[in-house]
Image 1 (cartoon, rainbow, N blue to C red):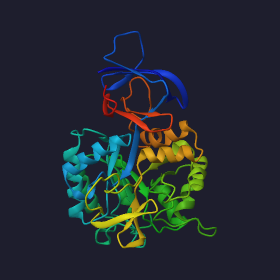
Image 2: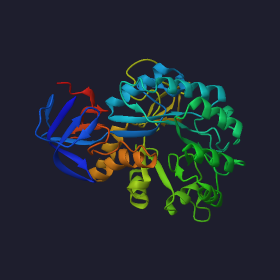
Image 3: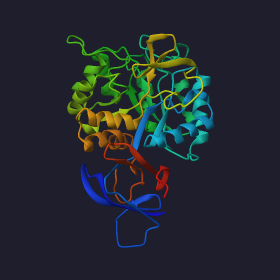
Image 4: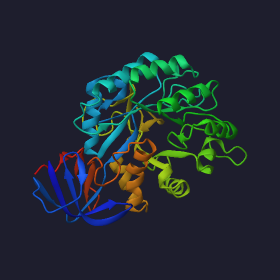
Length: 380
């Protein structure tokens, strides 16, 4: 479809500007004097590149732990409502049988999405520290092994884009070599590494961090830990949960300023019941309830299970914390596209995939465009 959005404020080339946005088929094109099938008045609206969530377990009552194609496609449709145009369904550490079943479900769903596009798989483990399990299944934790890695690679059929790993574990060097050969980003997470161990991990090629500050060795003045390694070294990039609960808003802003927008990726780490309208609320088989903006174990409010965040809410949070709109847009879309080499998306630019979130000036979503199609919101 040929679409023209006229006189809209948009984040283009790193700044907010008033412009016309043209879409031809599934990509952005130069706006020109031609006939368009749909012309939208963009006055009073704001357009940003579609959000990219590279760490999400579930949403809308659907989760990767369901292990079904239907669940992954349900996530895709729910994510579009929150402005997400690309995502990495993220698999928990669990038994190898469960991990590979979840991978196969994602592979089966790939290419059939009616909402956000599956841009890769993120496996959160299973080579993680027994001391930093968090909400993962300890029965699925493994020491690094080529056999386990080969099994996951076979089930992922080339879709694995990221794996969370503890750099202090024996045998990690072989996993790094395999991942590098397959183009997989390895990310320090669920790790109890000392600063020296984290630095060694960085030196051999583990240069991203999973939900910075959470489930990793903390920054201390005598042992800076994984957090110190991430903050002190330009080679390291970070993902951070943008809910203001897992990490204080002022620390989020500090990280953005310290690491810079190219090395900062905002994620949700959202769980299955986020945006769920009805039914029993569960996350990875555990019944949960809402507690201070987080999913906590039902009946045990001190036991946090994870995030109830959406990428749209993360964007709104960032702006409300004083982060400029152009920077908030960059770290909820563009930085992820660059880090994971999703070279056809993450910017409003002719030739790029037409992935777009259009909001009113109060930052409420009006509609989402994915691959050139208006998939939710405005339809006429």
